[in-house]
Length: 392
Image (cartoon, rainbow, N blue to C red; front, side, top):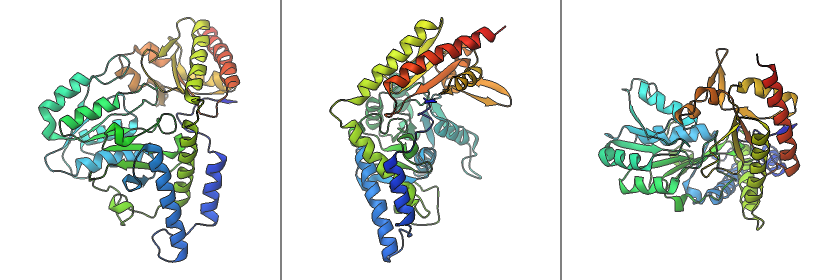
């Protein structure tokens, strides 16, 4: 089986599994306790905090541990909406991950907080590649900056891999005195990150996208930026996220970040090599399958992500056939009530429904090999041809 669904989750590395085992067997104390068991656990948590901070270009005090990327995004948005009276406008885009998109919908409906009024969301315009219209964003903030609680726009899209100009977005937000959050879940361990240089106020990451364990993530919260905690019941994480820390998961997260930082620092620039393999994979598939379209190929995108649309075919049928050919991938669509709906992200980019229905995402990790990509291209072509032959 060739695993090409790494944007969904990655296999935990040996070092990560060892860090988790050690924390469970030897460092299982409550990190809030003052006795030696608690002290040992606290030291492990803080060591991991430093490893995560180094990976994202932050100071350890700016790292808040959470249960994952979804909670980090929710904490950034809802914690900002509840921070300053009079600022109740959320600015985001329809191409965001559901962790942000559905949070925005809850704000609009008033469901985000019991008994609250409906909030307001401003959806920024996008081009055909899914990139933010910077001019429109600047005009919006110029008119309504005093109402804006937060701008939330992702660094790289989880379906297309398209990279947003986050430094320019951050600069526009700073010029208008507006808080900026970016969902960087797909970037950790794949691109060099420097939250301080980017200029964002808040940044979300998750461990299981970088060969770490599931159920743990982090929110970068720039020094001086205040948020209202959404999980209450304890003083943990400097009052920003209550509850006893997931020590084993946090230790695994730290180990994953350490490995990722070392990999990105290698002199042979492995991301460029893997990007070349991705490009060759796409070329082989497009050359063999008439009408196949690579989404986002004309703009900067993550080296590991390839979203290919096969018009007039159904992604669900393609995924089933790919499974028969021992290729694990995913669709830019979700099966709901027995109906396969096109991805909201692709529709927001203006793609025709017929094209969006047949979109399949292939995503590599740093463990993916050249031979796997070559073999995968041949298997994908065979699977697509098989599905096409079966159509009436």
